[in-house]
Image (cartoon, rainbow, N blue to C red; front, side):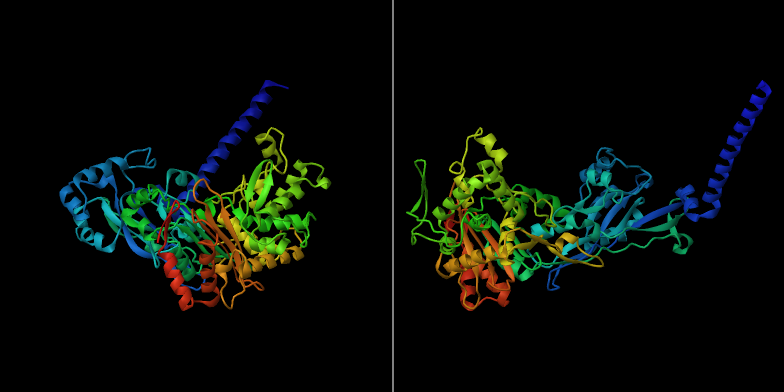
Length: 615
């Protein structure tokens, strides 16, 4: 092959590449300068100002269409640092109600690239946020005097009720992590920080719009560009309807006033959460506006931890409420039958130790054992489970036992539509092998039989157990949002989850829980006209025991399942049962009887902090 031929071939290849590059540039320039005004706008950006149009955030309603959260008009003060010149700083500070030192600090902080990495003195920066119309009005009147400064309309959340603070959550300025993980947000934007505001942020926030404004050579706004043809309208956020009953929620918060603990109520047929009380709570209005930071700091430093949603973040020993789950697992595995009886002599004795029990008839079979909450009965049942020869070893037995508990909703997150849910604790064979160096048996872990020992659960998980029993064997993942405007919930919030335990065994447990209300440990919860089924829990604690109650009503065709947990409240019948019964009466009847209203008032006035009760 000749050298001339090789050079000729190379010449054509290089020429073709050059022509292709030129052609690409021509097409790109044609697109930028002729085909679209949008790119033309970017090319001469100095002549235009893109004003962000913030959408109205979606409103929030309760299940009965009571408006819970809505928006009020607010304003941000903006500044383009490059355009600030010859302004009367003292007059500006007096108009905005700030000091000169605060003014200087804000301007310096604005230039901190660690706090504000997108800073440019030629672009709009946020100077102050969330001013009310009354606060911003004097500033707008003098705006002509403060070159470089401006305003933009925003909205702030307002609350119709002083209730459900931990559920509704709050909004605050987007963090650096928010800005980096989602291109929707810019510095100064607001985002849901907790509760529903956080978990449904993408539905509530809507979509921002843009208004393209024309500026003259001096930077002054002259009007809309191309009569608004390039403007993009802001799309409001979607409204949410919660499953919450705000009247039930407020009653629950009133009953838990000056106490620490939780209430969770669920509609068993749908998994909808009817009320979720975490006490102490706080007024959600505290985390709105310019005082948000100060109030949040005070709430964070409160020793009672009002920002903590104990219903999903608190993990407690479930105590005797857990005996219902034990009974179901033992029945399913044939360890006991409903007629199985055990004698109780004021407790369970083992290895020189004594696990006490209160006085009741003896021996007992399953139904009265649930009704009287007999510790001995469930200790013997648990031992039979762990030592059953058909499992071949305690390790296999505890694995089967754990699987049943997980299927009933314990040990893992249920998947509620609120941020921060904890998983609780259901120990397995590996855990006990490590804890006891491979030497353990049913007696070693006997506390599991009565919901103590290593077992931990959230109030939501125990309420879900009540809903599962009410349904005789299935539950729907608990959720707080009932409807999203224009779309559907996740499929899991419609899907029945079966536990794998036969329905007939649930019926035995239901009869035991009804027995508890009629003549057992739940007698204070017997409301005329309502067939309440319940189970008390007195969870041991390093100090005074916790008071718990799990129940549902009516016995047939249940409408509400509930868990009440009062820290340091003592016996389950002292606080858990009466609070739970009052809430079930309120929900089913729509009101409290005069006598029940008196009981509610008395309960709301009781004060318990770490076991000290003030009457």
